[in-house]
Image (cartoon, rainbow, N blue to C red; front, top):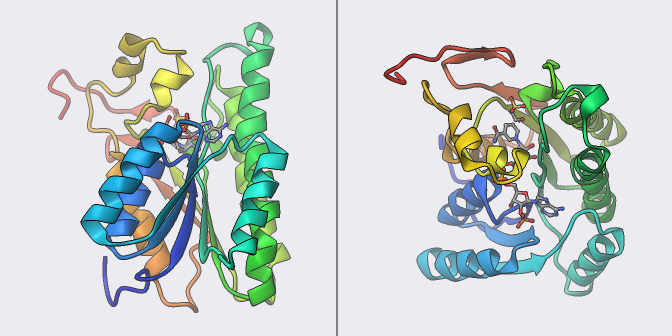
Length: 263
Ligand code: NDP
Ligand code: 8X3
């Protein structure tokens, strides 16, 4: 991180903090003195993370077992924060997934619904619940985790692509609707990051998931966390609206340079 630490003492709410990019963001932010509100469905993972971050960094970490698709639960979380006088300085809308890789006419409607409900509606529920708290005090920062898949469509990915195109539209729309406020809005749009993402996409097929990351150096979740830190740490008059981040070996959603040595 460059310059002074502007993250220290801030309160950051992260969805999908039990794994991958969300977990890496939690670790990086805690190491820089941020207090955390961590949400995901696998509460036992969050509780372990909470204990280790509190012990290592002396920050406050609250955990919530939360399914972002559950609108009443999302609203209850915001009400709970409000009741306790907690206003997140930062909301990281990270929870998301791809499910399946199929031609549209062969795809699973259940997979489509889960992707749309999580990536689009869940992000909207969180934003609708938390943003009014930021607007009321005219400060805050929303970081949406989009994807290169929201810039370029690839075959068999249409529905995941559509959800990430939606995230890009919502990011832009949020920025416009917050015109005149001091609230910043950023989308971080990664290419291939080695997390549980592909294991989830292929419904637990670990061999197929591993193959996605073979023959090149994919991004690590820590790379994205470092970029989130950077984006949050720039001075208040600076807003990074949208940032596409790819592995050096990846030049588009369709082009990944793989070699036998994986170099
Ligand atoms: P992971 O599968 O490792 O992490 C996904 C996180 O989302 C988990 O913490 C999971 O927690 C949480 N999550 C999933 N469903 C829900 C839900 N209904 N409610 C609450 N939390 C949920 O994947 P990544 O870290 O890679 O993915 C994070 C984000 O990054 C996603 O939005 C993804 O689309 C995006 N992305 C990923 C890329 C990649 O190549 N990995 C590239 C570009 C973008 P739990 O299961 O405990 O609820
Ligand atoms: C995740 C990256 O290329 O699998 O958003 O869609 S990709």
